[in-house]
Length: 155
Image (cartoon, rainbow, N blue to C red; front, side, top):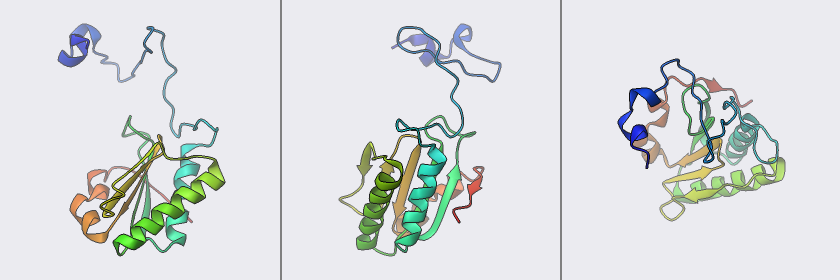
């Protein structure tokens, strides 16, 4: 691994506030934009809203969409919701997966936590969907951790 990256060598550090990234061949990559479109051309915001509405329709509680486009390089949106028990968590995840596939043509890269059913994470790349039991949501408090993120209305 490149030691300059690990040590933060001043010659490799960008102090302008803008970030320029390169691919493996050294070619400059285009600047990342907010609400990156998926491989099917659907904007991340739309995927997030479809997922949120699917959870809401399946009786998930306190459904929120957080816009992380200005705060994170990992993804553009978090969709966070709760379901009252493990069985409903599982049903909500199934509904989100089905609705996003049908409406947007998108499928999650991975789904983590399915065995425990207390916090299931669905990774759509630019959108991460979190489905919690109330206890797990209270414990991890993602809304507090990402408290600076604007909320997107789902209605």
